[in-house]
Amino acid sequence: MHKLTFTLFLLCGAACAQTFTTQANFTGPNGYNPLYGPLVQAADGNFYGTTASGGSSTNCFQGCGVIYQITPAGNLTVVHSFSRSDGFIPGDGIIATATGAFYGTTQQGGTHNYGTIFRLSPPGTLTTLYNFDFTDGAYPTFLTQGAAGFYGVTPSGGANNYGSVYMITPAGALTTLHNFTSFDGAAPFAGLTVAGNEFYGLTQNGGTSPLCGGGCGTAYKINTSGALTQLLTFNVQNGSLPFSGLVQATNGAFYGTTAYGGFEGVGTIFTMSGSGQLDSLHSFLTTDGANPFAGLIQATDGNFYGVTSAGGNGYGTIFEITPAATFTTLYSFSSADGAGPEATLLQATDGNFYGTTNTGGSNGVGTVFRLSTGLGPFVKTLPVGAKVGAAVTILGTSLTGATSVTFNGTSATFKVIAKGTAISTNVPAGATTGSVQVATPSGTLSSNVPFRVMR
Image 1 (cartoon, rainbow, N blue to C red):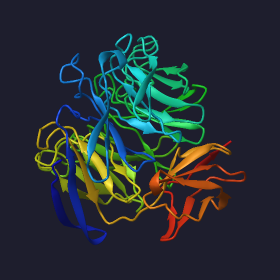
Image 2: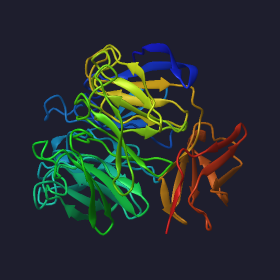
Image 3: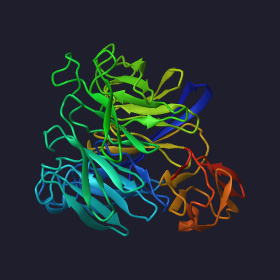
Image 4: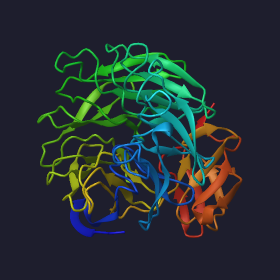
């Protein structure tokens, strides 16, 4: 393991020290090009992710991809190496669940070579839940957990060959909810965002704008019955090619990025109301970053953080933007410490940011990095919403000795598990949507986002 550490002194509201650390370098056998999949934090306190290629399989050029585990200290190990039969190019990450299992997709491979949906059960048993056959979609990307199962999109295939939206149960039963027509959107690569009983999403292409060949992309919402409403069409000036999903902020609005368009044509940051009113917050200028394929996260300080795959020194940047649109470049990559970050950042429960670069590093095939900005610890829930009585796992860093767990003030019975890095509980009767709080000997920790109690 090779680490690089840099301490930066920048203005971030008040003067503060920021520390960038290269946690691990991919080598090929342990993964190659992590692409767009963000890291996830699991109950064991470790992080998990995917790479689009690499691993031990010899029936894909440069390997079929891996699922890997990396500890907070930077020790990286392969959990599963894909082969063509169980899918390849798992470059869009995995999601962790309260059961301890992970779910994800491969963009290709499987029975028909149009991609798969899989479940990974500890300590590393992979089960293929579904093989796409093009008529129901092709090349699936990110998954999102909902109350009934998992929801996702395919950027191609389906009834019209413009992609689809689907739901799949944990047992593997798939239902197509919508087939895109190009007018209502095309090539929906971005994952869905849960908002109440609806999902919000973006398409890379399609829509009605004549300024992009095939359309500049759209924003839409869809309910669990498959009724889709187009909210807006991008038009180059306000951005084009929205690649990653939206984040719903604590103020209820949605925030996102486009990989192209804007003042210099190298991408934008925008905010959108639930009805589709769009306001541009920032147009990238190459010097402060370019081509943000990754989405945004809202951190515990209320600000948004993201990465660009280019710009800065030419190898990409990490940035912060406030809800009032004050933009700060926090770090510019140099290739030696990573290049081309394309995955959305993770803020872990220790308060630090973790991410990956697609290339660069000591072997030129990508890195895992950490950026510390001084933000404090918190807790997060798996999932972020559920019905009363449902099992919930609360993630943290120092939960041993916890004395109480409350869901928006309603007490819940609980058990500390996994050496103090997680708590097992159930949504208590009478709970309402709001903050989850855990009282520990060192203080009370609050959840980073409100927990949604579903009806």
